[in-house]
Image (cartoon, rainbow, N blue to C red):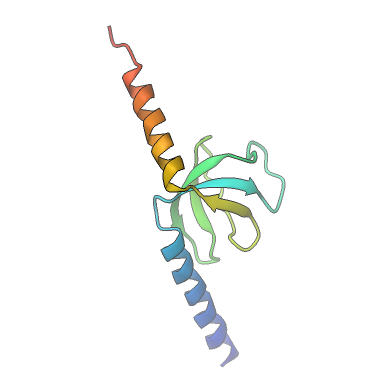
Length: 100
């Protein structure tokens, strides 16, 4: 009976995380629970999925794929204004390329 309750709680956690951080969500790292090289505060990334622990599977803008643990690591979702700014910057980068 205890295992069933644990599994139910785990499934509820996973569903909550799926809804709050769906694939494609952009986040900004505040702090990891452990020291990881090349993972500075302010680094941004995109949620790629979730595993069974549950941890968010990430594609970080620096090329890393380190997962984050919502109960242990500190991060935040980007707001609509920040997402719009990122898109504008990406468009400017694309438009600034000279193919001649």
